[in-house]
Image (cartoon, rainbow, N blue to C red; front, side, top):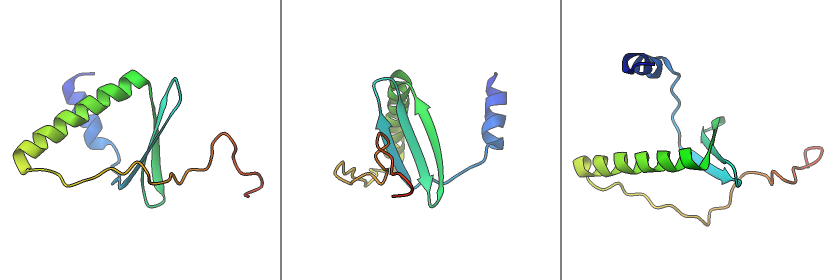
Amino acid sequence: MNDQQVNQQILNAPKQYCDNVRLMSSEEAFLFVASSGSTASVYVFSPAHLKKLSQMILKHITDYEKQFGPIKAEWNPNIPSPFVDLKNPPKNGK
């Protein structure tokens, strides 16, 4: 696929605002959940692919901050996940 085809594919793709992200992992894969309200998209990445994505995102953030100034954001790893325990899902809705 050439650049023009990729650009057209991006233009035609449905867009969704994302205001919440969750990330889970196993030894072989990362599960990335992007959501807004009751709508979510789930992506599965290999560890190497997710690491490349994180490097690309960091470059884009660095470039953005050079142009527009620092982004004020703080990640808090102590916020509990809203996901149920996927190894022991509730039975009969309980």
